[in-house]
Length: 91
Image (cartoon, rainbow, N blue to C red; front, side, top):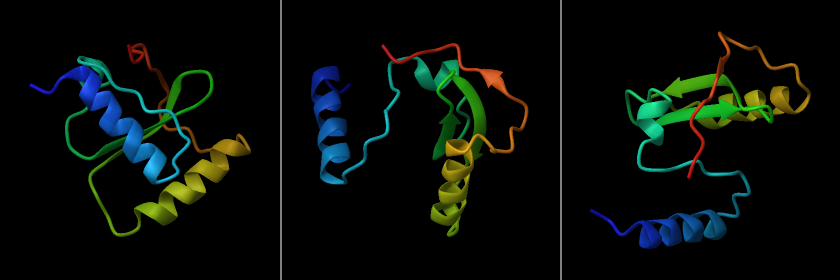
């Protein structure tokens, strides 16, 4: 098993190297708590902590889809499929 401190450092370096400024939620039980059933799984969580979109799997159109979803969330016009409160927070 990876040392959690080392894993945190690896994730932080990856985010910095790629100039990503979005928060990364992780923890030993996070994927189970939010119901991840496949990899990759991307969750869009709004500023209130509500899950507004879940994408499981890969497609060649992810960048375009994520761009418009993020833009819609920024203007609060995001289509909100069955919202659920994200109870687990990264530790």
